[in-house]
Every structure is written in C-alpha cells, then in structure tokens.
Image (cartoon, rainbow, N blue to C red; front, side):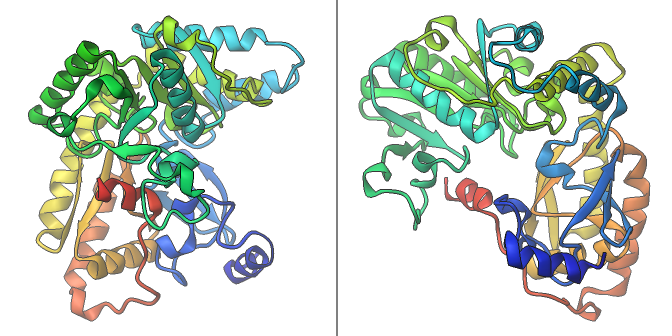
Length: 403
C-alpha cells in the first residue's frame, strides 16, 4: 500500500487523522513524512511501504516500555478472553486501583476514565463539588474539552457561556480572592524542572492548603516518565487530585484520577461505559508491575537521555535545540531549520516532531542518532531545500506557550 494511497483514503473518510490534533500531517513535513503507520515494535515504527523508522515521538509520550511490549501485550491478549466490558464492576478495576495506590501512596481513592482529557474534566467536577466553589485556574494544556479549549481564542465550537469558565493561572501573586477558587490545575513540570520551579510548586501547595483550594496535578505526561515515576513522588508534593494517562498503561486507552477520599467520594456525576475496559486495566496493572519490579529505572532513562540531549544540542546550536528534562523535551529555535532537520532525519529513518520523547529502547539508538545528525549538519542548512509546507504547531503547544 503506497503512502499516497493511504492519504487519498484518509481524505475521503477521516481527513488528516482520527481527531488526534498533534498527529495531523501538517504537524510534520507533508510529502516527506509517512501519513500512516502500519505497526510498531519497541522504538520502531513501520509505514505502509514497510520502511522502518526510529521513533522519537513515542506515540505522544505513551510508548515508554516499547510498542507491543510482550510482557504487557501478552497479558492483555490473555485476559481479552474474559470479556472486555462487563455488566458489573470487575476484579480488574480493584487490582488496577490497588496497583495505582501501591506507587502513588498519597492517593486514597482511584477512579478510571478513558483518557487524560476526561480525567482533567472529571477532576474539575470533583473539586467544585467538594469546595462548593466555581472558579478554576488553569496553567498549561489539559485536554480538548470545552472549558479548557475556551481558554484559547478563537475557541471555535465552544458556547459563549463556557468561555471564561476557567481562568488562566499566572502565579499566586495574581490571585485576588483565593476563597472563591475551587481548584488550581497545573502541569507541575512542562520543560522546566529547575530548583526555582520546584520551590514554586511547594509554595503553591501551601497556598492551596491555607485557602481550601484543591490542587490538581496534571501528570498525564510526567507520570511514569519523570524521576521516581512522577513529579509529585520525586519531590513529595502531594496534590489533592492527580491525573495520569499516556504511559501509565503503555499506550492502552485509560486515564486515572486519584486523590483524597473526601474529594473522590463526593456526589458528583462522572460515568462512562468503557471506564472499566478490561484490556486497559490489565495493561495498567502490568505496566505498574514492570515499573516496580523489573529493570526499568526511569531515573537512569532520564539521565542517559539528558546526556544524549546535551551532545545533540552541542551539534545543532545555535540554530535550534531540544529543551526539556530528559525523557521529555520540545524543539525550540529557527522553525525553518527545524523542519529541514526533521525532513532529512525522516529520510534517514528517524521520526521527530514538536514534542520529543525517549523510551528504554531508544537508549541503544542514541549514538546512531547523533551520527545521522552530524551528517545532516555537514550538508549545510543552506544546501537543504524544504520539500513541503512549514509544519504548524499543534493546539497543545499553542496552549502551553500562551500561558
């Protein structure tokens, strides 16, 4: 099946993709990047023509233990014969919740949804119900649901009365009446995990406690990827609610909302037919088991990736760089040269995108990646012609830059 054939079929049925904004063709160099993937294995993706790529996008951060990791996939296949969606709660919900609590020790109760966006919206219901307040302050990107999308113009499709339902969090010093605030939701670490940032988080925790505000940590990305498996765990900063997704089940569809029992036991309404999907729950339990009992040292992954990024940035500076804390980063710099770099690396069998992610299998590919980068730089940027439109930023990037 040719790439062009895949593109034409998509145009006639789903457009650029099945509504995953950050995966749309115009996020990359259209005409050079493959439009569709056939399958993945470890840190590799294969397009519809069979070409193999080393993947530094990692399924937008979901692929931490490797695509089709047999220790996870075999369990999912095994329990798929138990049925996927039962008429009553399953034992798999209990086991998955206990697995979450065994690592995220500050969580009294655990609820499951289907993705990170749903988790972020559910957390607001919980916080508002518990506090009896309406105002929520938000910093960063917290999904595609109406209240969050309403933060960023033009907010197409969002009703006017939903716009402004959440206000932007710009720091404690800008809060005038904290007793009216139900919750502050924040990505504790985006790219900056400096000492100053961590001290700011600790101060925010104290501020929320003093004013009866629910502190919500959106660790959809940092959960399982950051040192000690979460920012909250690494620095012992206990949020009232934590949201996890992406790598928590190595790419299976699930979101986790966990936190204080008096908040999660409240009389709010959050319901979904597939919130107890067996395959996702099994994948989550197995992923957490691997994190706790196998040779997956996330701190080592971050340290080795940081070393790789230091060497990478020495090669590509001053034109651009990847900023971040190790297993997650983002490209910053001259957008045209970045696009040229992505293009040439794609031709050489490497996939890069706006967000950089690393996983355990990519460690063995670092030297090869640096060698390929050096070869491209030696061509000279002026000698490389961009063969497609300049990639556009995904909505999530615009949200983060806007805050």
